[in-house]
Image (cartoon, rainbow, N blue to C red):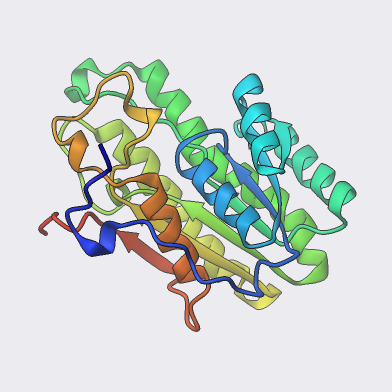
Amino acid sequence: MATQWPNKSERPQKARKTQQLAGKVAVITGASRGLGLELAREFVRQGARVVMSDIAHDELHRVAAELGAQAYIADVTNEQAMFELAAFTKRTFGSLDLWVNNAGLWMPHCPIEQMSLDRVHRMVEVNLFGIIHGARAALAVMKPVRTGIIINILSTSALIGRPGSSGYCASKCAAMGFCKSLALEVADDGIVVYNIYPEGMQTKLFDEQRPQDYTDYLDPRVVAMKIMKNLSAKKPKGEFVIRRAKQKY
């Protein structure tokens, strides 16, 4: 049965092609599935040369081959691996124009006293330090040429506390603080930072425990299209929140 889109604004539509992406070189972390995969698909469609990075070997190579993109295995928690990814991209394509910090982790909701601190530490390593490592690696290539775009995929959980989700919210709030500071710091270096705050998306991130309202979550294709539309706008939003149409605040 065809997917039913309750609101016209939620239907995935092709983003307007823009010269901003044609021929550009983009790196996307966490790219083997979900939003990362949808962004890679759209970047390729718009003429960008894309390096898809993830820790999932077989899956990454398969989807990258399907899209005509370059696969690169790397763990965002390893800063040296991120610098090597940036260097590989520059060496292979001659430039690095866009870097998308998309890789992220989540853990099932539970009371604070029942949280696995080992899992919280791992989540912070990916959600916070993964972005820090990616940004530092991207800047090593972008700053000398004084141009580039860094896109950070955060979450509305960075904007509001949620019961049972204190560890995840903490990781995203910390990442938001870094990303906002990053945008201000590199503004005079010719580098633009876009911070994206999607609500929950229907991805494998929630395979371990799907929230009760999972069916109302955003389709990653919709989120990717909204990001691309913002990127191609005359005045893109540096802080871009993407909410479900039904959600009330």
